[in-house]
Image 1 (tube, rainbow, N blue to C red):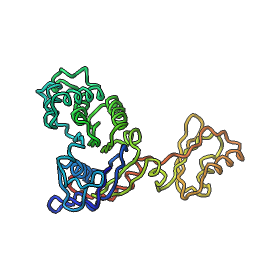
Image 2: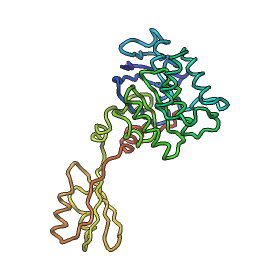
Image 3: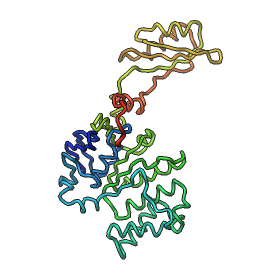
Image 4: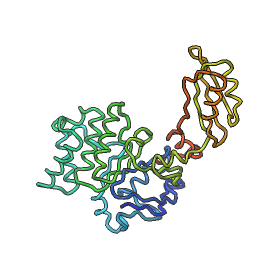
Length: 315
């Protein structure tokens, strides 16, 4: 549904987006990740038609959005990181105002507003001033404004920024629900949100695509040392585990008469069978043995660490 083909965007001498190419299929919920200055927000603004690329093409259904920019904008709902609400307006007034900006009136305005209010569960605050709302409800009002014209594509830039843990969970659930009928592009720094809501990830670094794929694909591609945790009761356990073939580093700590050993594997060889055999041979009591999964946060850091060079943040 969305295709970005070799798109570039400069701000003076700064290259914010540098030859970016990717596609988003209809009905996908795609996570858009990257450190500050990676070009996420700039790319999102080009997808919404707010900015025009210096080079390259953004297409909806194979048609460049520059061919009909107004028509392309009608197909997109956008919730920017700085949620642009008017605190002195009542929620109902604000949504009416947004509907009018989208050219809606009469039955279309009423049905679009009603559906948006129901989908975002803001009935309880519909007649309250926006300035009195909690941050969670403010985000919901912003989402209602983004979807009341029934867009096919929903672009969300840091929708849970500044929310407490309970509010974050509520917004994640809302994103999942909204994604049942729309294509969603979600920018966030919170890895739990990505794993809970997104079917596929696009990771940007310094304006370029660093990696893309499902969460499972990216975790499977993760590189680096493998970590093992062993909790065992037995004489000389820590020293014996440290010299197992394939162990590159280790550290241990005493706990309740047992020893807890953290091992780092130096290669691809699986160490758990060797650890189990050693425990059986020495007569140790094995309380715990597991291999720690590479986290999405570790993958993100590995892919984007090279970009931490003090580049000015143009998002």
